[in-house]
Image 1 (cartoon, rainbow, N blue to C red):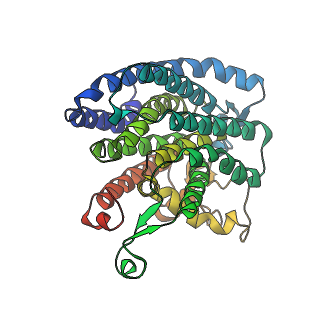
Image 2: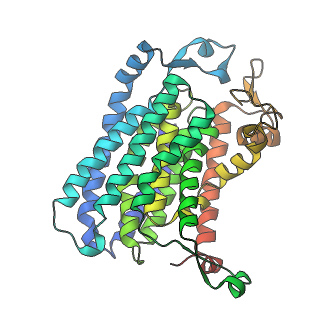
Image 3: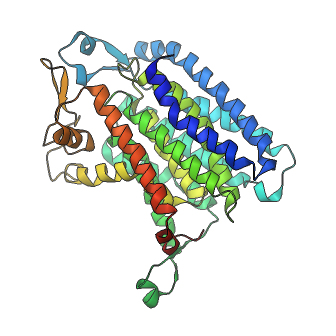
Length: 387
């Protein structure tokens, strides 16, 4: 077992330990969580085994590309298989469906019964986005479709959403509008925009071996810890639903990370980025913690805001907004005109190797998730959250 893989196990090990510690207060959940953990373990090994043969098929189909961050080196001349996120999406879908069959064929306490309609809506949205991502890898869709199609994919979520459409206002706004403000359809519009943001935010903070999967993996582990903290709340069943979706996601993503880490043997493609983003949107909306979810996306929000001039065409936007690889030093150098967090980090730190830069950004993701917990569970949070 490599040192890189042992390092990658730290977030999931913490989440697993916290799960065991939390479930002592919810003994009825031991059985389903144990069953889901077994399914997820199987998903990890199946994904790990499927990637090597599938990458051969993707190369035969012409789905491959050169690693631009290694341009000018022998590694940069090799064609790397692309779109391997399809393996993660399919295995995750099968695991979620198998667990759904198990969970709904047994008698469950009403408190822990997740609405079947919401479960199916979540599946529909994630599967739709997975195939949109695969279509983008094959057809190279224009940006306008990347904004419209996630909106369509979010419709099953909005129809199935049965939670609150209110927001809690802090002082002094509460004195004017009241403590609780009913937004109605505007709240659903917010959830739709959240789905579009999540689906694209992973995709635009990318370009390094392991970065897309790594950030998704860290966020998923953080979200599960939040879900475990909220099991005793009124919306505990909704947070349980989130756990049901994210455990197989973590397992399959970890298997993909094993192959995608520097030096990458496969590329995840837009398939994984869109699938991962919609998975987070699904659990955030149907898990009734869409506001909290954004706290775990602080690096993605920074990247999005910093990228706005290029995304909206005010500044010329190249197809690949990647750093420059210096063949002499074998380090990446930031390009000031490429407005994203990857280049910004290099402009702050100076040239770094691709592996070091990716680790730096993932550590930043971990720190931002820690900050998210500090904000969410501070006294200030009572001004904004219902539970």
